[in-house]
Image (cartoon, rainbow, N blue to C red; front, side, top):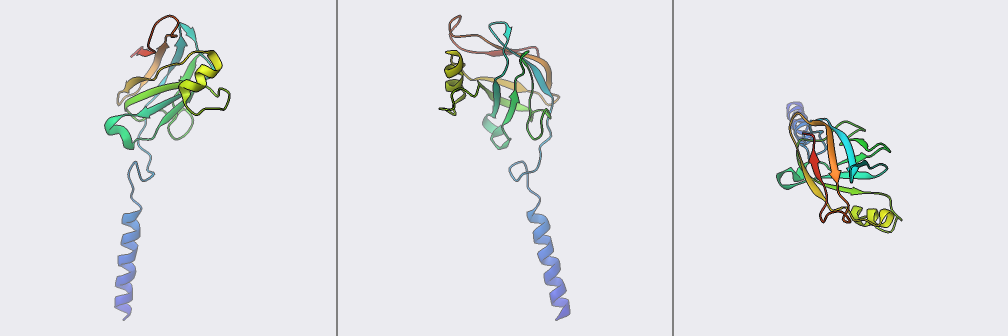
Length: 152
């Protein structure tokens, strides 16, 4: 009887250990890479906005990353803790601000503050990351469409 109880205890402990493994979707942290730079609008530093990096395609299980842009336009992407970087892959980039609090859509929030809507665009972050990247936005008054990325 004691032998059966010990066997049952060992079996249950194996289920617990195996069940706690988890991957990126199970809460485990995926390795991040540096992603820092400057956000500009029409060639000028664009500060005090929030940038959201939303994983695309096969990266759907990867966590969304964020950055708060400083007054001088500088930013550092955050996935788990402030400034830790971004999981390598392709992302849709959305730029927004707090706006009037009436919308959660970053483009609508930006339009509420500046009268401009910034269209989302994409970036591809390699495994070794990117530093000193310039995310260039162009207002719709100057050119239709939105941003792109330079400085790779």
